Length: 125
Image 1 (cartoon, helix red, strand yellow):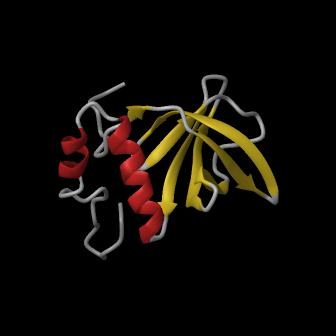
Image 2 (cartoon, rainbow, N blue to C red; image 1 turned 60 degrees about the vertical axis):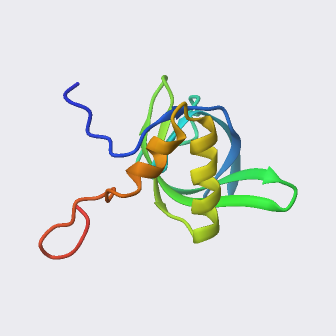
């Protein structure tokens, strides 16, 4: 594989969550997470290319909901890319990543750089 193209740090962290896809609630556990996506233990019901919702239950009244797309699914694990989230979900996700990182300040510094390149038409590339 070539040079690292990631713009957001991945941190090793185990968080239990659920993936909702086609009305099914599938339990998952993260192996690593970033502000842009997550990697889970293998789960054959999660096929690449599918849209889903990832939900972390942080406390009885705190649920973090992230719209996502499954980008890779293999015997090694399932990778998802976050598509959208509300401000509250971003706040909690940022804290989850910061607290799991060995360099929390680095996570905050990454937010100063856009996660996407914009094409001349104004869309993400």
